[in-house]
Length: 121
Image (cartoon, rainbow, N blue to C red):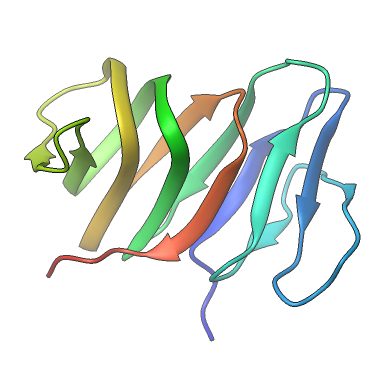
């Protein structure tokens, strides 16, 4: 299984949970995230995740995130459940963001996120 994302910044309180385990561990810059891994910050600090090709981070609710370093196909899922192509870096309110087979980008957020493969080609 290939990694779908990597931790780019991990301020105090940033934790990750490897799929299939029960324990949260402190996250560090450079940690890789695989399918069904979780990431969160317990102190309300914003962490940054790099999404690799075919990677997605999904949230339980609509969240405001900062997206940057976008390249290739990058889409976000809006509150209506529609996937919308992203044209430029900026702040977005979304429920998920993902990159296509060729692409990547950085996501800055403070909410618990679930790493998944993208659901669209």
